[in-house]
Image (cartoon, rainbow, N blue to C red; front, top):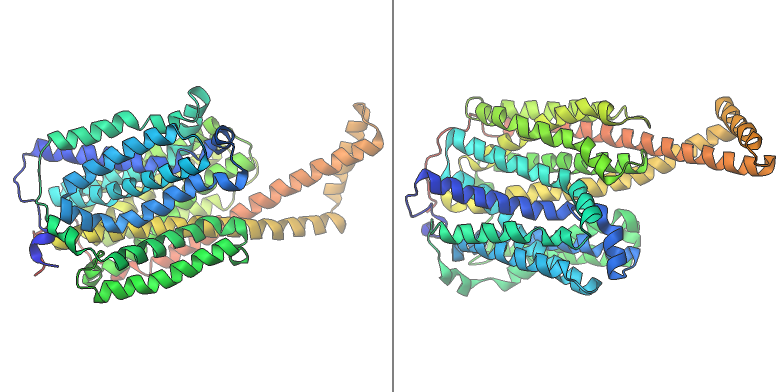
Length: 526
């Protein structure tokens, strides 16, 4: 790739314009990330509204995620061809239009098509916001920009289900999509009015490697489907999952061949030549694993074990989001002053402490029991994200910056997808193991459990139920209690595994580039 194709902004911008452009992009990124999780708590309402089956409705989520992950690495090429400004304007505008169409969807196929387009255009906004923050700002300012985007990246999936549940209860499920229209219009119009800040190279559109594009879509789209649907379909026992795995495997081989041998590759893998970028990418993958699994597991525990409503879940997990926000300032301040390897090590250790505390979860844990683990995790997210993004992008030549940002975000998203798939599989397996062990204990003379069952029978019989019927109800109550206990023990196992994973990742830290996030010399690769 020639030097001018990824060059730094060709225009000298006043600070207020940089801030305005960055803020508009941050809002766009937040919208794209919020829409991943905003439908989760409202699936049953959408299913009823579209007359879809339980198996079919999952495609609303899967289509969005498959399309989004394909666009993330493509965004750099499109931004070089059309300029970051117009790609972002187009993404925000199409996101707004598809949000309107999703809200007006008349059946499941129409909804899935609109959600796929929405995810595809939304995916461009995520890496371009990070790359622009590093292009516009240096040192402490770049650290603060990363912290702001980090807060938005983690707040959106954390609060998405609760916000979605509230909107559905108050306004109806169609408003999950209609609420995107005002901010989407503001983002698109703001960037149009704020003017140009870099050159476009439209002739790149004449040299698109379509085989590279198709193999990228097959590889990442197929991989996302396998990770999303695998746990609930018994992985490769399902023909659909096996087919998508085969597509992803073949496409992945073709994609890598094109990366190395295409005269004009769509995805530039040159950032991996940069010292420490591979280590930073690996850490980004693990941090994505931690962010998305913690965001996923805590609400699942509260819903399935504690039977919390969407609003109760939202008010409980809000603590993590609040402390993410509060730690943004200190994280940015430290990033400009201390070695980023120290910061990432502190972030990883905080993750270990948080997940280890969560591994002692019991069936009666609620807001206060979850308070301190979430406080620690909130700080861990920002300390780790600011430092790992800084290590990945800080010394990157300007013409590789957007590709590097795309890879960094892609690795974090893949880490989240792999993490959720792994956690779902582990939960199923560990719950079965603990349930079998508990039932075996019940059958071989667990005196306490038998005494509880006998007491329940006596109490139910005294309340008007016959002894035979009372025995049936008591047995059901005991089994329900055993199921809850087995699931809780499975959560403990999963949190313990994740804690050990973060301990292992401390071994990667020495291979990253050291030093604080100081002034970045503008460089171009020739």
